[in-house]
Length: 115
Image 1 (spheres, rainbow, N blue to C red):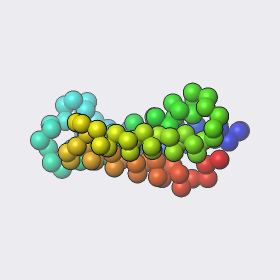
Image 2: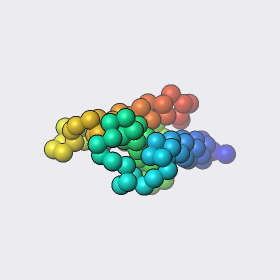
Image 3: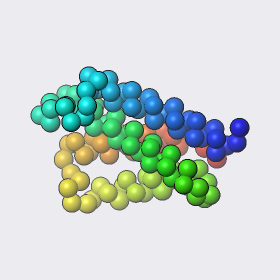
């Protein structure tokens, strides 16, 4: 198994775990059915949603064939996510939770032995 294949397998596992946590946080409901006013579960939902989306972004970047290295794909996604933080409409507690979840997932991924 190549380093790229191993990394894609790791990504798939992490993304699946994030989706499972997201599903558990929503009570196995669709995201659109989670009440916006729910203070407790909403944070967890947005956090896990951000993690799942950030990992999917990395997976797409790696699969797109960019040969800058796997670590570069993670860094590019992180840069993209951080750039969105200051955009209009990207504020409030839900956005902060979403961003935090995505950035945490990327940080955990970088802690792995990524080529």
